[in-house]
Every structure is written in structure tokens, then in C-alpha cells.
Amino acid sequence: MNSKEFHISGVEQLSEVSDCLISLRDQADIIAFYGSMGAGKTTLIKNLCHKMGVTDEVNSPTFAIVNEYVTEEGESVYHFDFYRIKKLEEAYDIGYENYFDSGNLCLIEWPEMIEPLLPEKYIRVDIKHDATDDERLICCEIVNE
Image 1 (tube, helix red, strand yellow):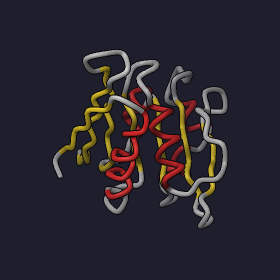
Image 2 (cartoon, rainbow, N blue to C red):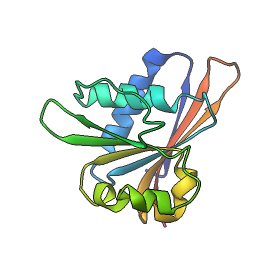
Image 3 (cartoon, rainbow, N blue to C red):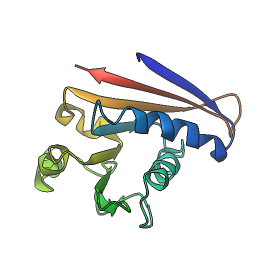
Image 4 (tube, rainbow, N blue to C red):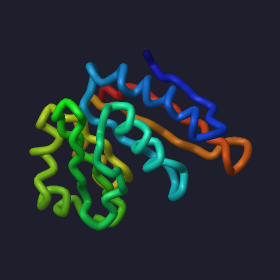
């Protein structure tokens, strides 16, 4: 799969995107979500976590930087929000490598803030506004640097 595009006109259609991301899980444990403020990164992550059996409440960890959720099978899922970090050292301070190297799924909002720290292979999700405010174009691809 080079990339897959989804034209989304309502949150009920996010399930298809989540299914695609789950199917890519055997290729990469890191999913980087790119999109402007309000594009729907957290909404997609909530849908993905729900489909994976996360029973915890899923919220963007804007101030905590990372949240840990647990699936019904007891698997940890890490959700990062790097919007507020000012320098890479802050990612080192939270021990990002322990999460990224854990083998657990890591969902990253605002990955552009820590791009040099992303692994060679990860799943990139770009979310852009489409024709109307309610529509989104979501592109998912495996990145091999």
C-alpha cells in the first residue's frame, strides 16, 4: 500500500479509516497524525481507540503530553500531543523512546514538533479540510525513511 485516501463527510465514516489503520498495525507501531487545529486528529484517535477496545476515556493529552489507555485485552496504547513542546529536549524528558520502543501502539498528535525523533518506519495520517467545513480528506501511508 502506497497510500489510501478517504473522503469523510461525517464522523460515522471514521470507522473505515480506523479499520485501515488497524490493518497497518503489523507494519508499524507509530501513527503520526498531521493536521491543522480542529482538523479532527483527536476525533479520529478516539474512534481508533474505541475500535481497538480501549475502555478508558480518550482525550488529547495537551498538558500531560502523553496518556496511556488500556484495551480490553490489557494492551497499552500511548497517545501523545506534542503541540506545547518548545524543543526536542522536552520529548527526551518524558522518555519518549521508552514509549516508541515498547512495541505498543503510539498515536502522535503534532508530530511535526518532534519529527527528528520519529522512527524510520511509521504510519503517516494527513487530515485536511475538504470541500466544506464538515468534510475531510484523510490520507494514510506507510513512511519508510
